[in-house]
Image (cartoon, rainbow, N blue to C red; front, side, top):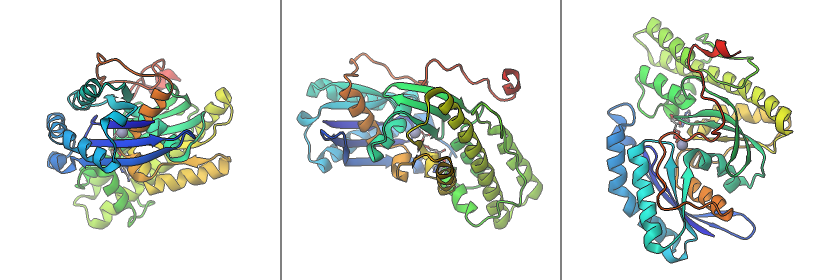
Length: 357
Ligand code: KG4
Ligand code: ZN
């Protein structure tokens, strides 16, 4: 099987080609990406209209480049996959419409992929991990713990009731005057900082439900920064290190709660898997590695460039779905919101957590 994958849900334009052999192993033949970071940097965040236009400008050439690099023709493709959400609607439509057009012209099946499912299935591309596994999905827009039971079969164990972890990294970076995107900058600063200098809260630590809350921690960083102002380079490094240490403590504790919940419902998972951009953070990776070793479960995290948004994950999810006959018709529309577990109730939101327990 050979698939083209197209990703345009946010601020990365990406196209990739993956071949999958009879043994079920995927091989990345091309994985092209055009980042829009420079286009958005001046605004401190992604501007949807700028993002959509930037996708239009580069996507055709990027697909051509990926096809050439992989040395394949449209005729040879088994399917054409595109992320159909969740994401910025104007952005999603660029990739999905391009995929529909190619599928019609080349007479190939279309696979509309959920961007989150693509993150969730990436460890099967990199490490052939069998179902079921426990997934920590941590990106700019999402923070969830899920039981992955099969393609299209996800049970949400926990979620954030306010901000996503990546979003919290980005906001902390912004309040400390660090450039966008904030996650990698905060991590860089934290390497030279003292994680014990600021005593920051660890929200929901010890709760049985594997949910997250980040807004109080973010506010605590803001207050600490305001009290220190004007900030020296050491203050910034110490605030970043203290914030990251709090996030690490929260993540490990919430994963522990999720593992308990997973075991109660489904038995022991085949692995703890981390997906999404925040998974490229070394401190988070190392702590989860240690936790997994102590809990006696396999730990898998894809290489950093397959954790952040990319085309290979869409092509792989396309192959997994296509292999099971899950193809879509040309009338499918994009979805700005598209939860992996459609049965899970919406999170209650900041400040209302107490009403639920
Ligand atoms: O998965 P992703 O590339 O895009 C989304 O689907 O959101 O994740 C991007 C998010 C951003 O919030 C970014 O700041 C965060 O992942 N991120 C990091 C690191 N690298 C990226 N957060 C913490 N540490 C990092 N090294
Ligand atoms: Zn993503």
